[in-house]
Image (tube, rainbow, N blue to C red; front, side, top):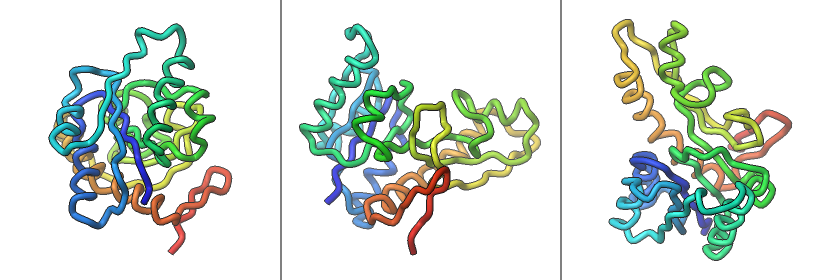
Length: 201
């Protein structure tokens, strides 16, 4: 069974969606650990509630991003992790972690990439006057939200939407497609060719 790690910084609602899918029995992976760069992250409490090993590792005590990521890798290897999920993780992944886990790190982002990468994708879409936004699960590469796309789903932007109301509707879709992407990876149904991710039937 595939061991996964979930890296988090905040509430952990996407972590909860993964936990729910595992406990429902259709997502056959083991959540080997949850790692947070924020000691106050509610996601750590979610992990504790479900008896999932978890750890707080702050980048502030390390001399460099590389040293910080080496500590994370040490913990991941101890847990025999085969896939890393970034679920509201607010650190940019560096070359050290990317080199250790090539094509084994995926991220969930609240926009239809390549539109509106980076922070506050929902607000960017509203400010731009977009008619449709959504959510994207993608492999992580050295760029900011630039890796090959695994799954996307669109969410219509309403005339009276605020950043909060749009974020809530996008989050509903995030909770669906992130566990599905993990399922496809665990079933070895994803192949990467250049920028394209092919899903094997």
